[in-house]
Image (cartoon, rainbow, N blue to C red; front, side):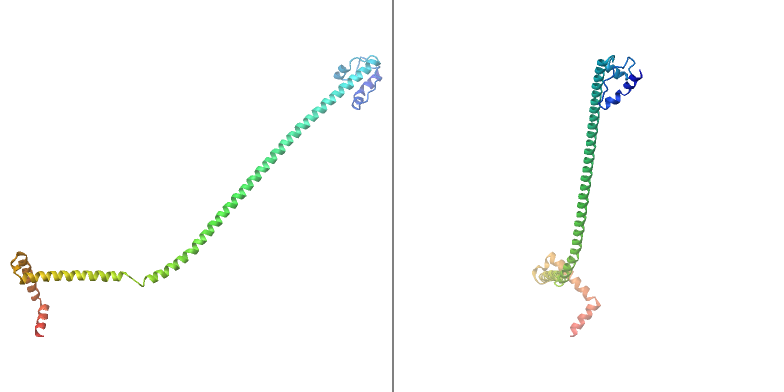
Length: 219
């Protein structure tokens, strides 16, 4: 009994080391194996049956180990795939961040270039303004020399003077016609002669004019 129990207790250790003691003929119906292994092994009443039980247990343990190894490999594969996905996601994130930084740098560079161009354009405009002022100043000075407006004023003055002389000539001619010719009896000439006589009388009544006339007569 004790011998069978000690041999049955070492069965798992021997199976793990791929070693199996086939002298299990002393195992009785009080099998110390766990229920699963006991079910796989079956009855072990004699040496032949014990050998068969040992082979069954060995095959079962090999199958269990193979299943465990496959499960372990499957889990490792799942972990590797998950790690690959995490790495790919991380690489994609890093690439996106690099692209974003690159785009931001390009935008910053373009903004600085535009500011620099605007500053240069502003400086050019400021440099052009003094040149325009200096160029316009001599023109204004040189333009003040001809001064064409005065000739226009003289022209207008002479035109007005000529017009007045023409009117005086017309009046004098009309007065002569109305005073000397036969037309003096016409109503128009009568009015003209009346106006002339009144004007002469008014002028003679003026003291200054009388003084001028007297001075002329004395001379």
